Length: 101
Image 1 (cartoon, rainbow, N blue to C red):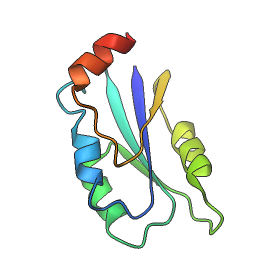
Image 2: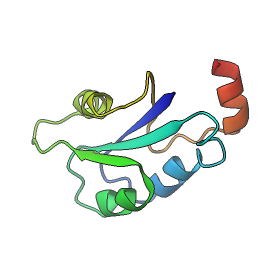
Image 3: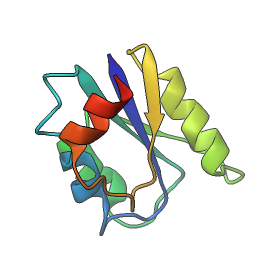
Image 4: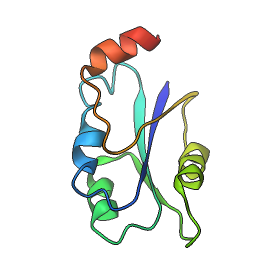
């Protein structure tokens, strides 16, 4: 039902928490988490591959957050897209999804 798209650039400190915050509601709302990376030089991609459902990489020096969001959206399998920066944590994901449904 939902594809969560997280654009990243050097977010190794935030990415695990950004992805895992959806674990409690993942099955209930058929959530896939996509990390769309803009060419990180830290371990963001390596870490994201362990936790995300899909990791896509934009290999272009001119990549920006808009392009990363669009790349993530292209690989989404679900009908509804939610774009979330890697440093954004939702206080209560159960309430969040109940609110938007």
